[in-house]
Length: 141
Image (tube, helix red, strand yellow):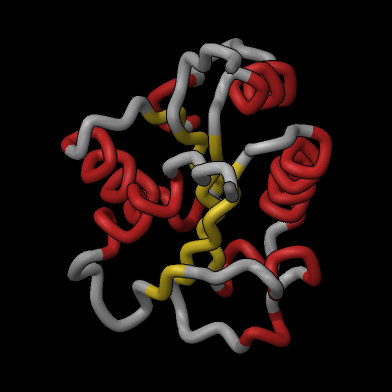
């Protein structure tokens, strides 16, 4: 099994940075190593290269879905990059986390079939549910 620098890569719209930081802090408190661009990129970094490299070094990803992310060209790009990596990487889990009251039909097609965590009404228990979802699946015997 490959070693990863990060347990989880968080993909989000810039407008959702406060929620992304909150989730990153909660996952770190639960013992997860987290890549979040707010913490992982410095001025002058080539963001596209840095995000791609960080995604490659991650065992899983959380995609924050909101009205902001669904209308952001950059978020769509990053979401596509994340889902493409998941398609190429066996065992790479993607967990959609819904921040707003977003209809399932508004989600990008690849996310519609993935069970999501909905924090639009409350964050209670969200970090625990996400942490469990990020754990590698046990092989079926």
